[in-house]
Length: 134
Image (tube, rainbow, N blue to C red):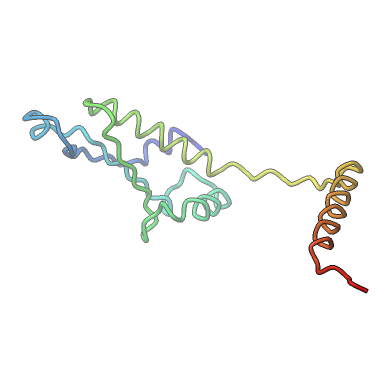
């Protein structure tokens, strides 16, 4: 993964933020919409691209675009930086390989404890039956 190439492939669009903010909010475009075309990207190897497509499937559009929005601050530049940081964080977490599971056996004491509680529960339930009058 080449971060420089990734950032060059990003597309930004500044739009007006929603919500309250007075007269000034209606004049300036501080909200940033980040768009990244994962399918046509040349920053990833084929294996990495497959992993990203699989892990980010719910976040991608039908065309393979990843869309992020940021309107956390009143500054367009800060919102752009935050959007890039969030984007890189999402990509890095999606590229991480899952840890291999190590098979383990239950300890001797845990097995004994489980069997003991099973025995106690069985006796408790056996005592709930109708009494034998013979």
